[in-house]
Length: 290
Image (cartoon, rainbow, N blue to C red; front, side, top):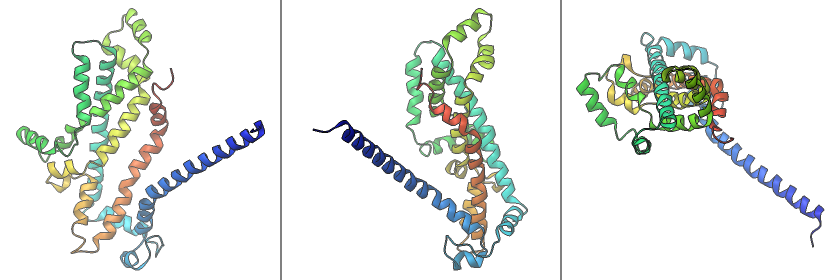
């Protein structure tokens, strides 16, 4: 027969083993995700000779600043133009998309209208459709509208985000009490003012969470830009780097440009996650505690 001390000892051992397994899995996952970025950081500091003559995770002659200067000034600073385009597509497009998603999700949550759940089911069905499948129809529509090879070719499709609408409805259910809205209506607040002055501030964690997901998707949007754009002055940074990488076999000096440019392109995503993580973490718990 087991004594209470033996039972407690076994429970403590089991807890330690569980924590060890979980921490081990997390360490392996962190190593797997950080290893490519670490290689990129090492490679961006090397000159062309050391890039191929040294191990991937060893430093050669430190040339990071020279590589950065070359990337930023190459071809009359075309990289800066690409970087600015990515900021435009990601920040402006994501802000507009997030506002539309939050308003739509709020409406699905707080208002009753005929066919609401069926319409919401149609929106959820959009989550199941891969974006690559609809690129050709979107290109044909953009061609009919005459916006191919313009900024609008990427900004307008970014407004549609079914997953963002779903998240916004969940956030609205968790963050905006119906009692507060009823009290504001009794005080004479209109529906638009109700949303802008009361509901939207309450939905700030959800807004930032949806914005972060939308920003990441827009920054990494490669195939849409490849289909819609022909003018290299309109390229986002990832498509521009792809074009540089496509000529590395004929002109190997482009390798350092691609590597250093890729390192710079990662920085905005890191900054966005670091600056918005408190909103993101609080947003993930929406509705978990009542």
